[in-house]
Length: 211
Image (tube, rainbow, N blue to C red; front, side, top):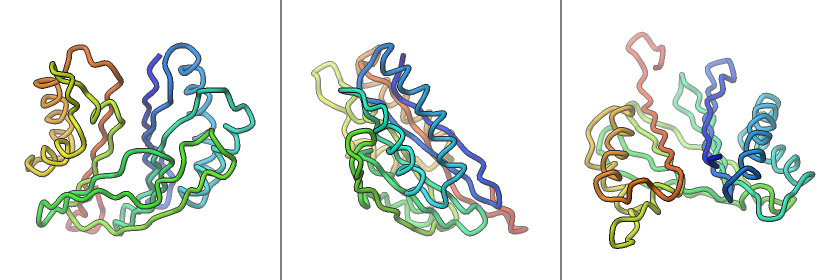
């Protein structure tokens, strides 16, 4: 009955879709809302030409069956795996974090956050585009990560997450493990909310085929 979700969608022609989101609320109602949402999102993403269009289509579907107190925050990215071009749209979700492969500098990609989906017909979304450099790593999380509470009820917070991200000189898989380990050392067990962490590193191979 969790509310967090993520998915990877093969869009063909060297295009990869990545989505992360969090449904408000808990329990059976939120879980049923999430199950239908994932199906609707996959259908919207398959027909959309951009992240903005996909989230806008989904928002219209959610508004047709709007339920009081239920909505979703989401970030949807489409990566051109050959060129490193990244297009993304965000509906009320936490920012994407980007770490430079050359300098290890970490920045938060806020862009136009828009409203969570399922609240208003006009979700105020917008597309943003950036180009990844070889070795750049992206980090996406849900609010359960930055709001994880320690014994003194202090939150993990975004600044701390960014510092862990900056310090870890490792691949995407190890980074995810390190973040969960850091939260586990300092936060309450079990956590009070779902924890979802996604990381990806863009690295073109020598023969020009990205991984």
